[in-house]
Length: 189
Image (tube, rainbow, N blue to C red):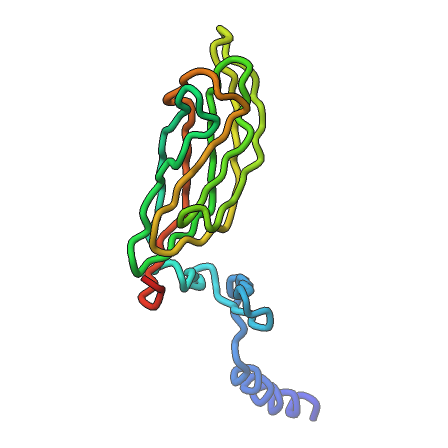
């Protein structure tokens, strides 16, 4: 009797296992948290990664400018060193600024600032002394900072100041700005 029952139940039991879904080993998913959306969790496999892009990025137009300036004999400032003119309908976002100053011996670069629209807005940088060159003919100073500076249409320029009015130093200042332009059709012209 046990044998007959075993022979009867075995095919039924095997058919039950055949109907169960087959579990396959799959690659472990990669979890990616979406920026600015803390409650969203996106799960994809390594063979099908999540496509990620900055939604604002297509509007950004890279910007880099370098300008050289200096001091006239009797002047403590360079005067305005134009970096760029922001076109109408655009905004310039400056994200990094740096200044290198090769000053006459004993002189110091005491201030460097980037300005927008005739000194209405400005940002002064922290100046650091670097020492003198090998032959002692120049004292070096630098300023380099990440910033977030917005400039609408108009001039963007630098002014650098030294602690002296003596001597001509025509090309002693090297200025760099990096950032991007963004289209802004509604900006004031």
